[in-house]
Length: 409
Length: 135
Image (cartoon, chains in turn yellow, purple):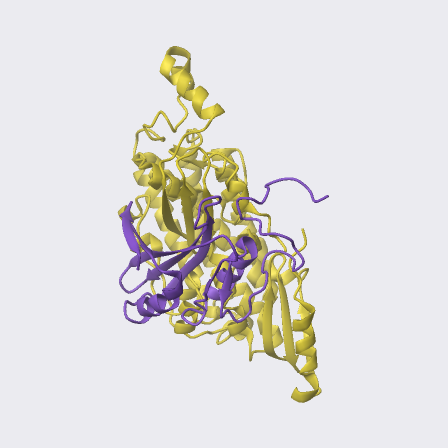
């Protein structure tokens, strides 16, 4: 499906203004195939020499109607759709959706499942930040950082594969707990990785933090006043880099985050360099959380005690009539969710991820709206690049860390 | 305000559609709801009033969230835009316009955002088919 083209009058309007505003003005069409837009973002940029006068993002090229698709899937089936929204942080999406439906159902999730969710969501944050750091640095010209980041990302993907059988579209969190029992030997695998990882962050920092070219390209670039960011709907690391310590994990704790000891890194400069520092700080904090989760993982069941929602154990199905009946009903029909509506937010690697789930009492969601962080964050791009140089556009949009699947849905 | 409810720890307020802009202004400036999280809609087809426009507001200062809801009739649904209150509403309202066909009066740039301009229909309406092709 092709995305929305700007109506001819917008382009024409931009071109018409040219004679009045000087002979050097031109309109540059950046994207949708531009490699630095990480997906299919189209930016229509009006230039005066090398200075950006006006910028207009054009999105929709990846719109796949996921919100419509939710309405014809049962609640449990729809988990797989959430993976495909923000494909760099699939487990964060799984978690947001599951928490929302569990809130509607009033389900209580056992501690082991909650902690496992925290651990894997934090590994997802590392995964997402590593992709961001690698590609962002490569956009600006630091090629080798990409190779370092993807080395560690590979380890994380292997851990995901160990848990769920999938590297990217994991769907490992299900309504009521986890999809599968945690695999044998997971703790050692995660512990090995997380023991090594802080040293890897030091390596990235060696490459970038005091690198004069990196500082020259990022410091003072893309800064937007905090009031504008709040007004334009920006969330996540971008806000924290501008000095506001807002983090749903602290402010509205979910899934036992209140039991973990971690800090929310902030900076006050609000430029591309500050966002880099905040995300590096977040990686260190995530590593801390993962370590606490591995060390303190509670024993016990990994799915909720709710036979009408959670599939029974294989062994019980062979010996108990009720288990067999529940299994048949859940598989053929799904489970009913009481009427109501909830808005559940979590802190995804990119910011506030909200799931607004409306139920009419049936087996399929009546309406699911995803408040995705990338969509909110992208609105600030014109504000960020107008008045700056064209070369800084790449640094600015890289620091926004959006995923176009998350924008267009 | 027409009513409200407190369910599963969340506050929902029903607002008269004609007053949405002033209610939002009051909540932003006097009640410190600095952030508009999202604007979306729910189609209750075939019930009337058919559409619910839903606003999620967030106050970082008070660590509080509130949901506003306006009900609109099915024939030519339109409601006042809140872009003047929060600029963030711009794209969210365009999305609702695109996918539900609800017009936002006073919106500075009301055109489709996800689908091509020539698209027929509004996919998130309940009477829009999930699969099939145009003949």
